[in-house]
Amino acid sequence: MGLRVYNSLTGRKEDFVPRNGNKVAMYVCGPTVYDLSHIGHARSAVAFDVVYRYLKYREYKVTYTRNYTDIDDKIIKRAAEEGMPPAELAERYVKAFDEDMEALGVLAPDHRPKATETIGKIIEVTQTLIGRGYAYVVDGDVYYSVRKARGYGRLSGKNIDELESGARIEVDERKSDPLDFALWKASKPGEPWWESPWGKGRPGWHIECSAMCMEWLGETIDIHGGGKDLIFPHHENEIAQSESATGKAPYVKYWLHNGFVNIEKEKMSKSLGNIMNIRDALRDHTSEALRLFLLSSHYRSPIDYSEDSLKDAEAALERFYKTLQRIEDECHEAMTVEYCIRCNPDRFTSIIEAMDDDFNTAQVIGIVFREVNSANRILDENRAQGKAEFLDLSFIISLFKEAGSFLGIFNKRPADYFKEREKKGLSVIARDETGIKEEIELLVRQREEARKGKNFRLADEIRAKLLEKGIILEDTAKGTVWSVKRN
RNA sequence: GGCGGCGUACCCAAGUGGCUAAGGGAGCAGUCUGCAAAACUGCCAUUCAGCGGUUCGAAUCCGCUCGCCGCCUCCA
Image (cartoon, rainbow, N blue to C red; front, side):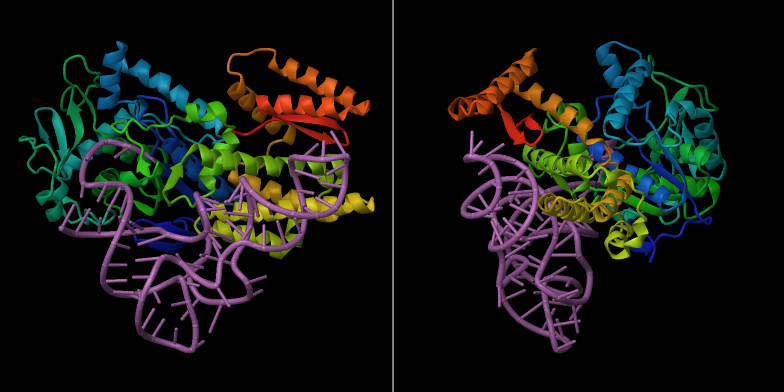
């Protein structure tokens, strides 16, 4: 059994067979950079990051391209509002997006082209479309003739005639059909522009992805990803453009679409005012908790973002890293001994089978936590019997490493995780207070003194006082450890 | 109106024809601990929105009903 993926084009899971041996060309629609990215962008980026990592893990030679849409109406509008050049605004949010991606542990794709760096190819494809009779020019605009496309509506399951009758599209008299869409837009005064055979103008939205795909990956590709909302019209239009420009079909062999992040069961939208930015979410929670939350459901299902979900994810992560820490402390050999992971096929292959089944990360996470439980059990037993049985533990460590390599979680040093956790936690209980750490540590030392003197009443008072502040104490063999309560 | 999806315990969430319905969070009890915490052990869905059908066998397939959501317009 190999990898199977759900293909939006056919509506079912299919065996994944790349077009050329083990080479995979993959393209994912990136953000339009006119504002900070929200957790919906995070979900798409993380979902396809896992796809990318897993394909490489399965030894495919993957070339992954994700674009930045750095020129469009929203960017121009926002730039005008802020009184800055559109290019500068776009650059600012490209940088912000990259920072967010790094925080989330999203690997950089092999190519990250910008629309504005691909104008030459966009013009070339547009010209080809005109030459082949699929597009027409009106007053410096160029439109694509949807009715000329073969198989239009196949991806989204739409029928052209029904689309037209129910169209809510503003009627532009210059288009010969309301369904036609712009490949090239003549620039209005004050807007950015590029020289073209049809005059000064800028690209339409859909064409840039077709052009960047061709430029960086080729005329046809294996995987194309994006959010579910891009299926229509964006991806439908991309297919029409690319296939009619190159004469090669299918443009994309496997279409993969991720589900939405909802807030209170409703889609995030500017009009509802319920957008959750990545950085706002990361103010109080570790980035790994956000990533774990995103990977705890299947990538195609809708997920509901809430503070509680993030807290649950954080609690789960703490459980994981506490266990890892225990192994490090109590059975260090397990960390260093090389264990042949495939020597324990039944426990290991279940994670491969889960991933092979359309990237079932939720199931893999379940398996990882089952192993967390085994590890703790072994450690308890070792403690009771005073011996270090590390072979099984080294298998578990290897399993964590393998799963972590394609999930992009579970692969920090425990100390680093707890450090980040502490930082986020402290910022919640004392937003601007400095010296809080010293204060806590002083109290902890005082309590240890009290305990040594068997003054348990004072010790308990100090513990209660700290708990009120949101600090939890744990008395371990190595001394008292404090941490910030989740909330 | 057209197209698509979903409904699994207190919450989140895997499982899509056949072993005891994963896992996380919360809760309850026990072990450990000065007491806690953590960890471990046990408990927590004879049942998968409801009804009917197919089948030796269904949470999983089919039909209907109810409820929720998305796309059809810029959107991850």
